[in-house]
Image (cartoon, rainbow, N blue to C red):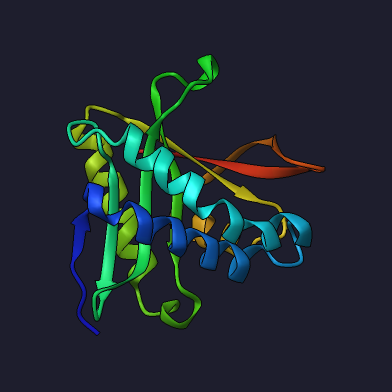
Length: 168
């Protein structure tokens, strides 16, 4: 399968919100409480409007892969607000629809993240992955070094994520 990674555009915000709902339900069912996951569809409009209102073409570090005009993978890099890691960039999201996993898309996306982070002047990156998520193995395989656990708060649930560090 051939694919192109493209920078997301403002007009992709609605499709990204829908994509995130789908991938969170695929990935986190059994890890995140069902009430939260069941409610994601109800928050899509709010997330979409927020994304549109905060979209900045200049600082946009979101990338998508489409097949048949439908998003099948998504990547988002973000500046870190945590003073402890201010010289790092964070790979905030890397999602691939379940039916397209295990064919190299994730590896290509993480390489894209590394390259874009370097272009932006970063030398280090972190990735947080919820405990219980099978992607923890992927991030280790891609060279991530476990550095700590951190709280991941959701309404009515506190989870923990493993944080991995990469030197770029």
